[in-house]
Every structure is written in structure tokens, then in C-alpha cells.
Length: 151
Image (cartoon, rainbow, N blue to C red; front, side, top):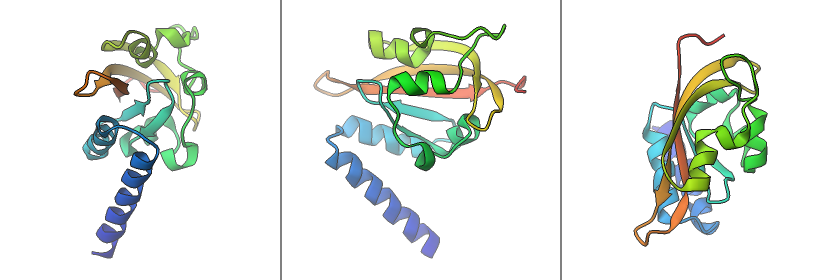
């Protein structure tokens, strides 16, 4: 019971922080959705700044979100060392989430990343824009999963 109460209080604090930082309801709701999913999710603001990734993403990315915190697109698009099947580095603009930020349209791709724990993962990523009711671009969300050939 106490554990549930503490988890609820932590969630309330996070929601309040998001609201105080001026994030729209769409981003707040996206974050709540991500918390309920058993699939890894990564959420960024319109400038590409990482706002949140959920618990399932932590095992792939190699570190808890509480330990990494927010990152600018220039950092997160390279820190995980994205590469193709031949080990060639992928330019940030070839990543689905960066593409969605540029085009405000859904994007998909598969590639390898190295988690911050140095484990390699072959992932597929589908990214979608987060658009508010007023048709305002609020950011983007990437949903991703691993393939069995992880190293």
C-alpha cells in the first residue's frame, strides 16, 4: 500500500513539473501513456530535447531516465552510437525521430544502437508527431523494440 502511495505521489510531482515547465497537455498525456506501456517510448519537445523515456526503454538505453535526465537532440542522436547493419554510423537526420521533428510526419527505421551500458541492440523505431487540438506541433514520440539478434 505504501509503495503504491509513494508511486502515486512521485507521478503527481512529475506531472506538476511538466505543467510548470509549460508543456502542453498533449505532452503530459503522452508521458502518462508512455508510463502505462510495456513497450519502450522516448518523448521529445518540438526542439528535439528529450523530455522522458519510460522504464522499458531503460534496459535498451542502458540507464534510468532519472540518471540521464533531459538531453538536447545533438546529444541523444549520437550518444547511443546509432549504426547500420555494417557498423557504419548513422547521421542524426537518418534517425526516425529526427526525421519526424524535421517533417512533422511519422517515420520508421531499423538500426543498431549501443546502450550506455555498452550493450548493442538491433531496434526498430516508429516515431510520430504529437499534435495538439489547435494543430500545434507539441513534440514527437518514438516507440521502439529490439530484435532477437542483439549482441
